[in-house]
Length: 190
Image (cartoon, rainbow, N blue to C red; front, top):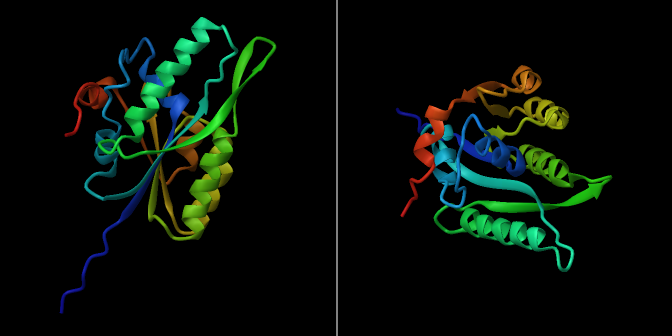
């Protein structure tokens, strides 16, 4: 008698602004993220396991009327969202907002949304392993709880700026180099 092997279900959680700024960094140098193959990256990280959810968590640019630079940033973000949510890429975008405080901009609600989805998925048994692309240590309590619930949490970081705290708390960690992700820059799925 042969038992059917249960296919491992993977949920991918991407901290959008974290990934965006890492990819655009001087070390990685990606120029046009509207052509980046996010789904290809998810599948690469899943390593032939079944991807059941892809979430991209990000603060939305708000624009004051007459702010030309802000209007262009907003248009560019909307083009990026259209690319990520397209049928080809297949991501769900969870939107927070961006707040200005003394000239500095901060995302609000994004980490909480990601942590809630990570935990709801664990409690409701929607995935077996979560792939987390983020460097935000605020997510550590959610990672710990998901692991207590029997889920694996894989931290994905970048070799030029790893989060040692997330590496310590994850079930598994992988640091990507420029060479690992270069193939996703212009390779679009059809």
